[in-house]
Amino acid sequence: ELTLEVDGLTKIYPDGTLAVDEIDFGIEAGDFCVLIGPSGCGKSTTLHSIIGNIPVTEGQVLLEGEDITETPTYDRDIGLVFQDFQLFPHMTVRENITYGLERIDCPPDEIERRVDDAIDLMHLEGLEERTPEELSAGQQQRVALTRSIVLEPQLLLLDEPLGDMDYKLQKRMERELLRIHRELDTTFVYVTHDQTQAMRLADQIVVMNDGKVEQSDSVENVYNSP
Ligand code: ADP
Ligand code: ADP
Image (cartoon, rainbow, N blue to C red; front, side, top):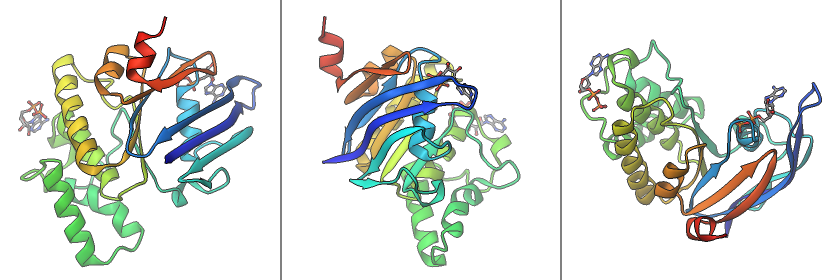
């Protein structure tokens, strides 16, 4: 069963740049997929096409078998975590996490329950009343993750979420991500240019180069192939 199917996706920007050239790949439900490739190969373009931030030139994006190519971003059941967190600076941790649920008119008692569960899962107890500037980088990224996870998306996209962190914190956050992935049973797509990170995290790897998908396979097959 596939959570995500990208079918013949092509993106040409208004200035004529062919960023993504007829790519195909599928992601199995519950997998931790790493989308990897050098800078400029089309990873962000692919990610923003999946989330719906940019119109695609050609091809389809399917979520759980349903064509969402024309669906507005806010109606796609997809979460996104950025490298620079993008928390609301004037809101507390709890308000940051609650905001999305209020936007979808979730009943107050359900908001309470889901936010408490997410704070518990992400080990954010005691930080709820802080603002983002009162948190370390690792804590901010945990809040950014919590804000996405609390909406229970079918698919969670992570755009180089550990990119700016030092090595020690990166390794710790990787372990945290693997734990959360296991506990949530959600499909993850993690974008990076870092091969060692990909090997540590991935069930499945999609290798991009120069606007094309070169390989899409299990981590074992990608790194053992000639
Ligand atoms: P990556 O995320 O792998 O670094 P991108 O998807 O950002 O790759 O970029 C793929 C190609 O598309 C690059 O050649 C980049 O310069 C180009 N590109 C990205 N965004 C735009 C844009 N808004 N307009 C024109 N070209 C773009
Ligand atoms: P982490 O465990 O996420 O790596 P650090 O080791 O960087 O956090 O920070 C240790 C402690 O210092 C944490 O409990 C955190 O709350 C606190 N702390 C870090 N940065 C700040 C800050 N800018 N303002 C207030 N407290 C901070």
